Structures are given as structure tokens and as C-alpha cells.
Image (tube, rainbow, N blue to C red; front, side):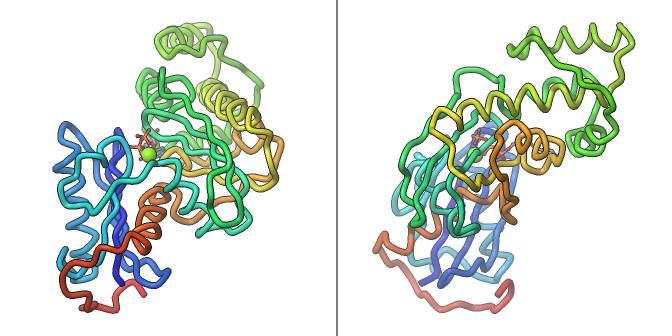
Length: 270
Ligand SMILES: Nc1ncnc2c1ncn2[C@@H]1O[C@H](COP(=O)(O)OP(=O)(O)OP(=O)(O)O)[C@@H](O)[C@H]1O
Ligand SMILES: [Mg+2]
């Protein structure tokens, strides 16, 4: 059966189309003001990539902040469960998943089958999230995709004393004024986020082999900072930003409801 997972987060919508444990197609788009529309568009885009339409899909699961109200899904599933399933599918040794998205940070402890053992998350404020990085990067007039490279140029151990993004923004502007180097400030910003995420993970009694999911994993400086803060092995997974949508597509295999013609029209992506 062809299945699909649609993860509509606070910043990006992700869709994955799968069949028999293989990814056929995928897409990532910005959410902007209309989560429902973003979910619809991202799924259509993933299906178009492999020359399929909704009628070819046996079951679709929605997840994420905006995944609850999608009219075209068979059912919704919690993000925690989807990330757990997706991570174990991508990296069978996964014990802990740390998902840093645009709006929240989650730490999930899983067993070898992708069953959630425990989890914890912070969605109360921007500290420790991708939004924190976005706001500080903007204050420093930097693009998100250059942060990893800039991090590597740091030669000084600097730290931010404010976790609140409003105060941290003022603090980094003061640090620039005091003559601190941008790479050192960027590295300090990464450690501020990674310490928050690592302390969530540690509250679950950390197990070996952690993986990092969410768009923030694009930032290699953040990956390095998290590895250092965690004190356990942190492995890369190939589809870090699609992880929740992959988990949703895997869970859709069991969701039963079959609609339309299941025939696959294209071998693209196999
Ligand atoms: N090119 C990039 N380089 C570095 N970081 C990036 C890049 N693009 C996006 N990000 C980071 O990824 C974050 C978005 O991650 P993601 O797509 O996982 O969010 P989301 O799933 O919509 O959020 P949530 O799960 O909190 O609802 C942004 O806040 C930003 O910090
Ligand atoms: Mg997310």
C-alpha cells in the first residue's frame, strides 16, 4: 500500500509518500498563515514528484501543530509518536530523539520498535528553539544557512547569560558593541540552545545513541554544540527535517482505511 505522512509544523509543512518501507517522494514548504493550505500543497507536491495523486494513496496520517485539522487525512497522530517511529526507521540504534523545530524542542526516549517510553518538551518560550536562532541571526544580519560555517571560525569560549530571546537579542548587540567576534557570538548562541535541549534530554535519563531531527539539524554548528552538550553519541539521520512525516507515513500502514486505486504510476525515487 502507498501511504503518506503530512507534518504541518509551526514553520514548515513536510510530506512524505512511502511504499513498503521506501520513500517514493517528499516535499517541504513554508507554512505562512494557512496551515491547512500548506498541508494540502505540500502533499500534492510530494505526490506530483512521483506522478501520483491522492487517489493512489491508501492512507494518510497528519501530525504537527497544523496537522490536526487537515481535511484529507485518515487520522491524526501525535508528533511525539511520529518522530519516534521515524527516527527508529532511519537509525535503528536510536535511544533518544531530540527534535528542534521552529517553535518547540522535544526530547523523546524510544525503544527499538519506535515505541515512546518517555518524552518532554518545551513550547512555552522561544529559548532552545529554532526561532531563537532565527531572531539572533537576524539581529546579527546573518543567514541561517551560514551559521554552521561561522561557528567553525570561533576561537573563543563565550557564553550568553540570557535565555530569554528578547534579552539575548539585546545581549548579542551589546557583545558586538564591545568588540566580540561574530563567530564567537554565533557559537555561544548555539550552546545556549544546545544546553536547553540537552537538559531536557538528560531529564529522561539519557541512553546511548541520540539522533537530532527538525530543521535546526541543517545547522552543523548546532549539531556539534548538541553533541558536546549531550555527552552521548549523537548520530545524523538523513531525513532529519522529514522525520515526523516519515513516522506518520509508516504509521499509516497500520491505519487500515484504503481509498482509491493503489497502483503506483512511477518508479521514481525507488
Ligand atoms: N537553511 C537552514 N540552515 C539552518 N537552519 C535552518 C535552515 N532552514 C531552517 N532552519 C531552522 O529550522 C527551523 C525550522 O525547523 P522545522 O522545519 O523542523 O520546524 P517545524 O517543524 O515547522 O517546527 P515545530 O516542530 O516547532 O512546529 C527554523 O526555525 C530554523 O532555525
Ligand atoms: Mg516539527
